[in-house]
Image (cartoon, rainbow, N blue to C red; front, side):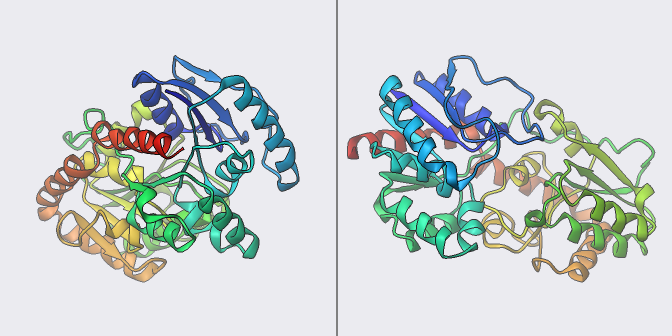
Length: 366
């Protein structure tokens, strides 16, 4: 099968999809909508994937360029003759794809397109409905995003939900390896991007409160983002900056080592589908302390494999962090259950087969 894979940029998720699609014996073309300044994936596009040069992929997306993108993508389709277009996010890549008139189009939600972008206004809602009504098939990584797609007109029998999952061999439990200088302290870990939707500023404020009563408490923050100045100011103003380890942007191959430095994983995200970093933490056997948004509740059960706290509530997150620190005797049991959750539901190798099934159904529907 010839697959035209059309995504926003090139990130770790794209690498995994492209690698697995090509590795399944398909011919794959990669179309990139835009290029952002911060590099998200240090590995080259996988072998066997043809990079398509077209009107997009040279800078940020602008709505006024959509007619030019549609015309250019039509030329790409004419040259490559794909059996299917796999496109997402909904309001950009999938929208452009359905505007070409090509069928079949499998639209893939990236979570934020249905949990955040659709609320930006009537135009975004119209584009969402227009795209889903013209999509041959739909896939997402969480029940909550599928339900939202149905609200905007997607046919329920033309959908598949599968968590993207992780490599359970690469992300696996190991003995804890505390950060340099942390000794036997208690360490929380977060690798969400420093953007408003991921709530890292909430975590910073909660850590300031929690660390006041627990001198052994430390925090690891990876990644970066537009809230960097704000987050560092919160930590510095709270007098805890020296108790925070900043790792920056970490290559995928090195990520497990950072999970193994921690006692508890934290995700304060306001918007998410099935978070891959959450699944990585579960696979590494880390109890997970996460916001109680619908997608997180599909993965974490308080007292079983982690804890939930009210989304955006600094005080409750701080209290939960202190409680986790005080209940460290239960971490091993919670961590074992976390790993079981990952093995049961977050195996990339097994879950990816559902995408191949969606391809076949979409092609049959035409």
